[in-house]
Amino acid sequence: MLVQARYPAHEGRYEGGGLLRLALCLEGAERLTYRCGDMRIEGPWRAGQIVVTPPDAPLESRCDAVATLGLALDPALLGQGVSLQSVERLGLVEDELLSSVMRALWCEAEAHGASSAFFQHGAELVLRRLDELSGRSMVRSVQPRLSPERLSHVLDWVESHLDSDITVGGMAAQAGREISGFARAFKTDIGCTPYAYITRRRMVRAQALLRSGESVARTACACGYANPAQFSIAFRRLIGASPTVWRARSEAR
Image (cartoon, rainbow, N blue to C red; front, side, top):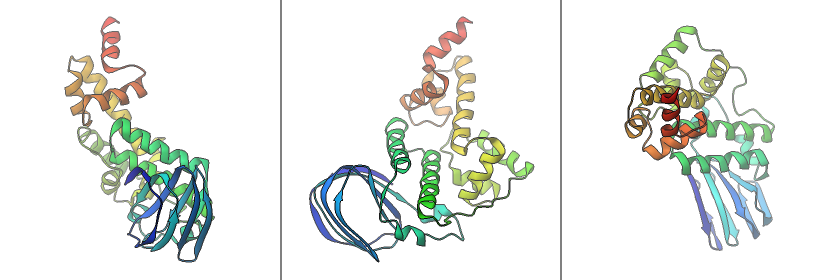
């Protein structure tokens, strides 16, 4: 879940849900008092700082009016055999990379909608950065590569589902892997993330359809986009021109 909101001054005790939560301050609050387990934070909450709350952790907080960008992640994205104990000690984090990823997720959602593959990719980046900041391993460091047969099966599956909302989890299931380990193995084998690969394959299909005379609206649907506007933005970003302009240039060659 990703939420941008402006909150009035508030105080209270809040029961923790089963999600890992990050709250990026967009407009600073002069006073923040935060208690979660052994973690205590008191002082101003400045723009760019992120409060990290582990799953199932009840907290008490008192805060002035503040604007935040909140990200909540399901711990299941980490896969089996991993621990979030190190996150409990992070508390208040000021990290340009982490805040940039969160902002990028929000901008991408506004432009393209909530693409499952993109958000899973963003979650992977966030978890990796938290891992680095905590100084302890939250993810397995060694992941075997995909066998040629498994990789071929995954790529064929993606090709046959380009018109639907493909998820990294769905790809991982086809490979018989956990999501985080699959994403790293896939990048090692293919040279790009699963999300980037899906987008590239969709654009290849889109170019073929546009070249054959298919409308932009039908092409968007055939490539898994909810509406032509989202498709056009993605197409322009990757190809360098809108679908209509690209087709005109292609026909003129």
